[in-house]
Image (cartoon, rainbow over all chains, first blue to last red; front, side):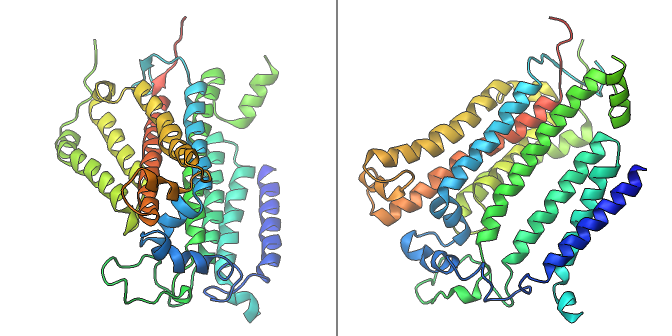
Length: 98
Length: 126
Length: 149
C-alpha cells in the first residue's frame, strides 16, 4: 500500500522536474546567466585586490565572508544541539551493551 | 526530442532526487528514511555544481610563479561560485545527519524499536 | 574492571599514520591560498585523525589531550574569537565588519597584504570549529545515558 503511493509520488515528481528541464541552459554554455553577472569580476580581480591565487578561497573568505561566518555558526549550533539532546552522559558504551 | 536529450545531466539529477524521495516515503525503518534524505540532498548539490561547468575550462586557481605574464579572462575558467556555495551545503548536511542520528538514539531508548508502525502502535497503547 | 580496546593490526598501522594525518591537515589549511584546500577541508582531515585515535585506544586515548569539554570550548572559540573577533577588530578602526583592509594599522604591510593575512586568520577559526564539531558528534553518539540519578 505504501509502496504504491511511494512509486506514484516519486514518478510524479520526476515528470514535474522533467518539465522544468526544458528551460535550463545546456551543459558547458559560456553565456549562461550564472556566469556573466558578478563572477567575471571575482575571477579577474582576485590577484590584484587580494594577493591570493585561489579564486575559491578568496570568494569564500573575503568577498562572501559574511555568509561563511554564519555558516560556521550553523555548524557550532549542530554540535551544541547534539550535546543538548544526548546530555548528561557519563559512561562509555561498548558493542551496544551496557 | 533532441532538445530534451541535450540536457541529459539534468535528467540524471532528477532521477537521483526521485529515488531519494521514494525511499523517504515508502520505507518504514527510520534509518532508511535518513539515508534516503541524504541521497536527496546530494542530488541538489550535483545540480548546482553542474551549473558552473564550461567546455574547455580550466580550474580557477592561478599558478604562483609567472603570474605577471598571464592575462586573466573569466571566459576560460570554470565558474567558482557554485563550488563556494556547495562547500557550505555539504558541511551543513553532515551536521544535520549528526543531529538526526542523535534523535534516533533517543527514540531507540524510549520505545526499543526503529520501525515506524511499531512506534505508532506503542504510542497509542501507552 | 575495564576491557582492553586494543587490537594489534590497527594499533601498528595507526601509530605510524596518526602524526602524518595531523601534519597533512595543517598543510592543507596553510596551503589553502595557492592550492585546493582551506579551513573546511583541513578541519575534516584533523577530525578523522581524532576518530582514529578513539578507535585505537577507546575513551582513554582522548581523555588526556582532547576531553569533550575542551573540544566544546574550542569550537566556540573558533567561531566567536577567531572569526567574529577579527570582524569586530576591523570595525574598531572605523571600517565595515569583516573589511580586512583596516588591519593594515596593526600589520606592517599595505592594505592588500592585510587582506591576505585576514583570510588566513579567518580560515584557522573555521578549521577549529569544524574539527571540534565533527569529533564531538562522533564521541557523543558513543556515550551512554545515565540510567539512575
